[in-house]
Image (cartoon, rainbow, N blue to C red):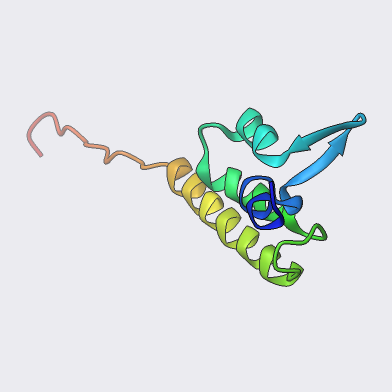
Length: 94
């Protein structure tokens, strides 16, 4: 592979070493957040911080924050409790 294809297929900002083994971030992301795109992308941008990419850590942190904020809003929305209306039955003549 040449340098250009390495950046496409195996970019260094998505690789790190765990227990002496090269690991790609998407393997970890799939294991942790296979069914949650918002958390998957949040963590993807956190992996990039300090590891290259565009060399813009602040931008990557802001992107992570955007995805995390959307996940928090989604969870808050789903946890909102809707209190059913109560009805009172009046018995008798008043």
